[in-house]
Length: 123
Length: 285
Length: 153
Image (tube, rainbow over the protein chains, first blue to last red):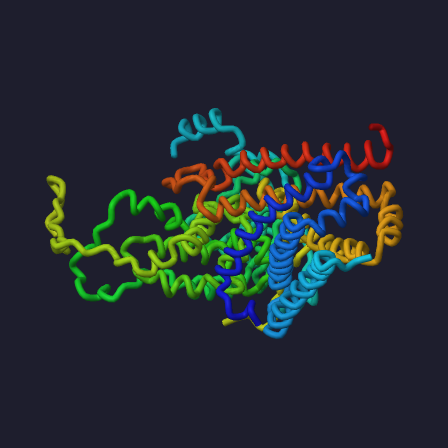
């Protein structure tokens, strides 16, 4: 598994870097939900606004990047918490594998939404 | 001490001759040979102005209940044997004045996260094992070569780790740390602080080995800077600072530290036996 | 020799991670950071499923959004927004600390031994970040409740 072969300091360095990038992208995400290009939260949630962003290349790539960074940061964070919770060898292995796969599933599932819209899919 | 001196002290210092008040000590008791479960037992202890928690526990042992087990040695915050949780906070019993707790009930229990052997005594084996794991000693190839030389180190270089050398291995930080509360493999604040202390020491060249020991699943990265270790440290070691510095070395200076050449030795032999100058009138040795 | 029978005496996650009485300020920040991280992490999973509704069509999306437009759901969103902002900003503080910023310089230990890492600028930074979080919570409340739910604007 990818997570097993990396040094812990590399994983945590990535945790910090993704965290900082998520902070920037998250700020854009919050702005886009409240005042940026929309006038309020309700307007940001209209179907047209949401799909408009999925089909715009800049917005879609920003969202995809946001998703990719988050799926690493979140599931590595869960991994850290779960490793602190129990310590036997099987648990450690199971946590490493499960969190890697869960992150991958979330990444792929979210990417599917964006990719299908970019390819002209959706409704 | 003459009677007038005693009077002088008792008039300037109240609560030295007679007890100030009686305090209820609620002490954690567990005898592995008899008890299934630990329990708390109450003792009334007369408290003088400077009675420490250790004094009170020894009062209990001598006067009320000789079966109470407590580990202590120096009574002055140097040996690190009497660490325990006093009124919910990790403290050294010998350095805690009972009156400073401002409480008529004092609860005393053994340190967290270490196995309890009996009453207030905990088994420090895991703690010392982790201390050994980080190789807390100077590592260099030529350490045996010149027994009569010293390694050159500047005052600034010394100050980088001077603070951490104060550690007395009392285990208070290990008990307070939130990560050790669940992670029994986590090295703990004490061992990680020592890892930093020897890595940053300019006389040392064992950074590579020590980084291997701390850069693991249960090493330095399981510290999340809760600062509990530094808050309870009775010697001003500040493990939280040391661990963050250790992370800094791993993140930014790993290669540089691993390749660093240790401080060279003085070209002048140390004077091994200095002639002692005795004061005038001192008998010849 | 280890004793024949000992008590394990580990604090466990509730009393260990979330011990909040008689502790230093940073320990509160740590507990909140962990709590906020878990909240936001779990929300990410729900959010990915939620946004995939757009693929089904406008009606499905609009009905989901209408279903989620109620005080309970918006309170949840407010908590998630607060958790995300807090976790993000406190994460910056932790990153800076791990880079050796804001934790002071080593001192010669002298009684009464004040730890430098707990009295340095990282603590002020934490207060600034808490203030920013509060301001953004107020803004989120304005958006989620005053505009969206109560229609004041």
